[in-house]
Amino acid sequence: MRQTETKQCQNCSQGFRIESDDFDFYEKIDVPPPTWCPECRIKRRMIFMNQRVLYKGRCDLCQKEIISLFNSDVPFPVYCNACWWSDDWDPIDYGQEYDFSRSFFKQFQELYSKVPWPALQTIEPSLVNSEYCNICSYLKNCYLLFGSDYSEDCAYGTYVERSKQCLDNAIIDLCELCYGGTRLQKCFHTLFSSNCQECVNVYFSKNLRGCQNCFGCINLRNKKYFIFNKSYTKNKYFEKLEKFNLGSYETVEQFKNKLRELSLAYPKKYMEGVQNKDVSGDYIFNSKNVFQSFEVREADDCKFCQFLFLAPTKDSYDFTMWGGNATRMYECMGCGGGQNNIKFSYECWSDNTMNLEYCMLSKRSCKNLFGCIALGKKSHCILNKQYDENSFKKLRTKIIQHTREMPYKDKRGRIYTYGEFLPPEFGVFAYNESFIYENFPLTKEQAVKQGYMWKDPEKREYEIMIKPKELPDHIRDAEDDILNQTIGCQHQGTCDEQCTTAFKIIPYELQFYRKMNLPLPRLCPNCRYYQMVQRTNPFKLWHRACQCAGIQSDNKVYQNVAKHSHGTTYCPNEFETTYAPDRPEIIYCEKCYQAEVI
Image 1 (cartoon, rainbow, N blue to C red):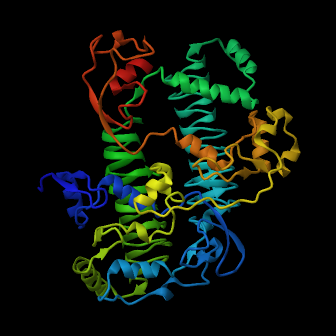
Image 2: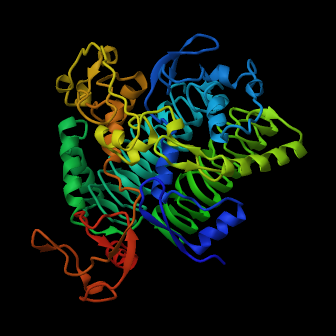
Image 3: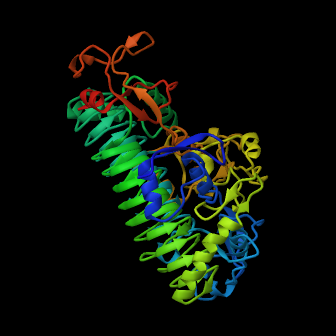
């Protein structure tokens, strides 16, 4: 067994550890150990994905106007999704012979620059009346959803899974009639709340489980008729709820601010997750042997993974989005759905796909591909050229060796051989267009200094018909004519949140606000989303100790430790957490947290 080693990252020059178990995994899938640290590997994958910055364009095949995630400067043709998924063109026609006088990575870049790409990264045949969605599948009557699947009648959401009639949410699963929430699971009519599971009729709350009819509550379990963590009779609860006037924008903003203030007074668990065994990271559920991973559901034997929302995932490293019965995935982004043994690949979608290396946009069940783009129902292809099985195996072996003999060197002097994901400079998205921006935000100066592209905001010529301060405070005063108005975003493009500067209310949206007694928004959809995600913790772990005794804030002690197992002395437990040491929150270990909330 190979012993733990410390390596220096090719990208950031920081040291990182490769454990003996990591070496076992790399040997099992027959790849060399990484030369980039885990965080730099995440960033390298994420720069290739644009999740929510959309442009107007024209299909290069049928010439109709389209909404696209690509601007007009990209080197490859862009097809509308109907054309891209059709049989009107054949990706195999772009196949090219392998040239041993040049680097594999350079040849792959050439293929990447000429094969048509879909305007939006969706499984087109699975969408019904959901044209304005990206990185989505199996949607019906949805609008401006991103990274979402199996949902219906939803809008303005990101990572909306198996949900109905939900607006303005991020990271929800099996929910209905939810609004303004993050990390909700199996919730019904849950508004302006976060990290809640199996809740019904909950407002402005955090960290609730199995609660009903609660308002402004934190860390409750299986409670009913609570307001700001205080119990009420059923009648008294609804009397007070009626007086809260939640159809008012001003009132809603006041309660949001109050919840943020209250939240600091209650302890936070060092990580979110249930029914796990031997895990580290945050928001990990029903998993075993999962380490340094974030937003993972039902995974086994995985490490350095993020956003695996669709279960299960097994035996995978460095896998970002989405899972769904995926096994032995390594250095992949946007892959899943019954796939096995996929390496260094991006946006591979179909079931029964296996043994892919350096592939993009694979569709309709592919096997044994190397360096291919947009193929469907193909096997034994290299650079989109068809081979017989024996020739494929021999050429693949030669190419892997060739990458070592003739590596690719990027503009910053970093070396790429077989085993590395694609160089960031191959990507077509600017830093602030790509998926990396919302997870690892940088300023323009910082991004450019690190060698990334940056896209300055395009000048928008919207005619603002109504300013946000001119909108009616209460939803009851919103007339149908609001559907014809162009509303100015409150941020006016001065933020770093991909502000569109203006937006419109769609008919379904207005109907939803009236039904739910919710005020009209003052921010565009992008700004609303970034306001939610900016309160999430980073993909980084700090070693810390439980703060369960003697912790004070404003000269007040916020916890009663008498009922904790360690009594009035300091808790001895230590852990890794996404809460940095300089954060104001009070962080508890699992046992101390349960003593407070159960």
